[in-house]
Image 1 (cartoon, helix red, strand yellow):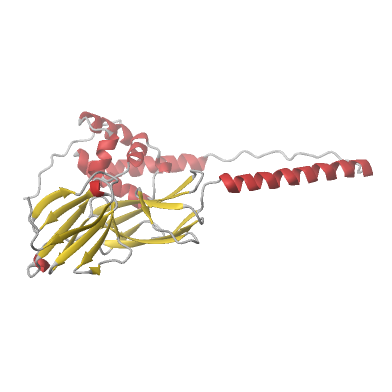
Image 2: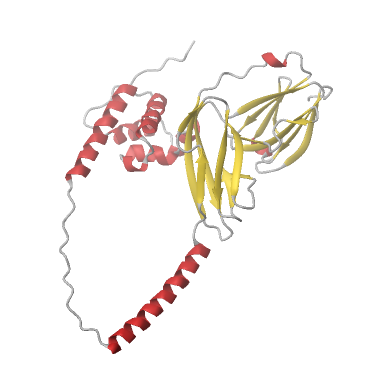
Length: 322
């Protein structure tokens, strides 16, 4: 039976942000706690509570955030969304009503060019050119790396339980997806297959160069996944279920000596996968503290500490589980 929720009537003469913030505070919840439980980033929750709609993504995703957040706070979804639309329209109308001030044209005085003035101008222009060139070179060396994520090109809805992140950055930069480092080609291109969790997946792609400068691109992917079952594992001797959390975990799996993905799989926090074998499964993870294992229906727990790498961990049909 689905859980029953009580609907709270919205108080009058309050902004949407005040309603959300007061309800959250009455539940003694911080933005960080709400982020973990709803998978909505704390910065988006803060923007909603402050009415800073310009800091939010597309209108469609904003309404999606409000549906999840209002359900979490046990507020009436329809009233919350209607109030959001009214406040958004008011702000748009105010912005459009403000007309830019006309600037008076500056009248330049006439000047008589002499050989002396031309020489002075030439020296100034040459010095300026040298300074601009030096500044341009310094900017290249100290600027944040370029980062292009070509797939997915924008916020999307996924039909399966995984997608590929494809993009390019400056050669020599490092790429992280939700905090996990991934492989990158010498020319700066990268492609990584990730496993999604059910619901909204916030994917953060970050490029970091050698001087510590960073560039980040974010994508929101909504996924509706079927519940994971063990129906297909009836005739298998080794059944291994991997749950990623509290952070992302990169894993490499071999089934009876055959790799599942030659470049491994990046599992986002909350994602789950089941692997089955006749004789043996071999697992490598780069984040043992977020790699939760269930073997043949028995919960083993995490493989180690957060950030710890575990290589070639074997699971066989004759393995004794304590």
